[in-house]
Image 1 (spheres, one colour):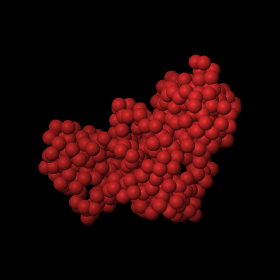
Image 2 (image 1 turned 60 degrees about the horizontal axis):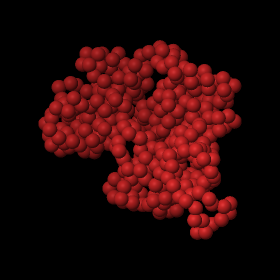
Image 3 (image 1 turned 135 degrees about the horizontal axis):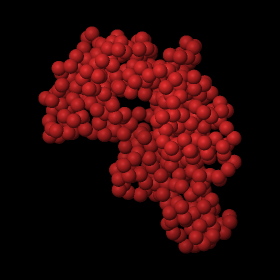
Image 4 (image 1 turned 45 degrees about the vertical axis):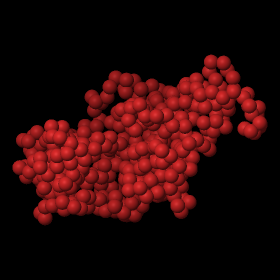
Length: 436
């Protein structure tokens, strides 16, 4: 949802049908999962507990929810069907927040929570619980039907009794302290924590956040953290990582462990991992991601811009789209050319992407070496480049950040030049508070 999205009271979501992009129902909403924060900051909505037709309950991250409207939830279609298991830092809205006794900050009165509302933050993909619908005067143990106390809707900050305590909450408080850090900065914080504390914080992060952080950590830390996650959780995190980064991490593990984790992953994701691991590490095939933006020749500029707007894409991947014959998934049909983002902004929405192709540049081959790739980016001022096989199929795309990762010294992540002052202060404060 965009800025100005309507407020949704979560009681209206109970039992609501969940659909994939084609309109097929995949299940129904049974609860919402939130992460509480220090003080009276609104909780972050992590995702939904969805019950499938098989009665299995799974977790649907909010990053895979495209809309909530008209009594239905629409998803991206990508579902992890492993059974939902609540983590220590998570709270269930229906199961744990409803009927809870809290206190109004202004008057000190005790009230009972009947409902809460959620809203998507402007210009961000994050969702928060922003308000609570409460009832005054309920006596302990009295059923709702006999309660005639006054009801009112208040801001989340107007009540107390929900949020984490300032001390004694283990990794929860440390996690809340570092919540606003960028993944690279949080990775730097984790790197300097003790192994025990690092494992606690990693276990408390949701899959997408942990995946982003792992991509920024030194190899030794990645292996250590992945090794301390339970098997299915480790597979979930690998699936949430960029395919090229996940393949690099898997390649560092013993072969037996590789196969165990690959067997736990979704078949399509596991196939991508195996394909990437078949290439030499410092080649275009080893560096590429298998998930660039691929469009058919009859797609329009409007279609391309809609794909570019995906918040999960890195700026480099969103800089251009690749036009190919079907199939659309890598390896694709014949690669026809590239359309750059700036060109998309200059042409009318109805223009076919096939009419504005840049097909002059030769794409990279999967065995292109790192110096060749770097020279390509420098010569043509590119931030991403297609990788095409001998048969003309698009295999993936290499981005400039992947090139830099492999050209910098191995210990470059030890340098703290990229941290903002407040990030460093937060790390010091967190370490002092938690004895790390």
